[in-house]
Length: 135
Image: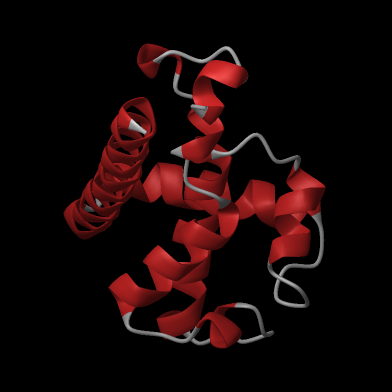
């Protein structure tokens, strides 16, 4: 029996939670893009090589997730003190996005990667759905 039919789902009713990027996905994508370790982004480190990607990750978490400011801060362990740091980081990247082409380029590139991840998840869901339909 098809589990999607049991759950009352049709192919077009794909739950967004199955394809949405998670905060951990965002951390991994940003760290991979900037070629840094996830542990580095979560530690107190004020080197520009770490701070900038951390701010980008925070900006994207606010854009792509429904996490509260405090929950975003928690995702960064000791690197982010509290919700005010999240607000500052988001504001900083938002302002830089408007005036610095490299920031705009980085965010666009990362958003393209995020889009690819969601497309892959959607394709996997569809393949599984079709497979279960024929079973």
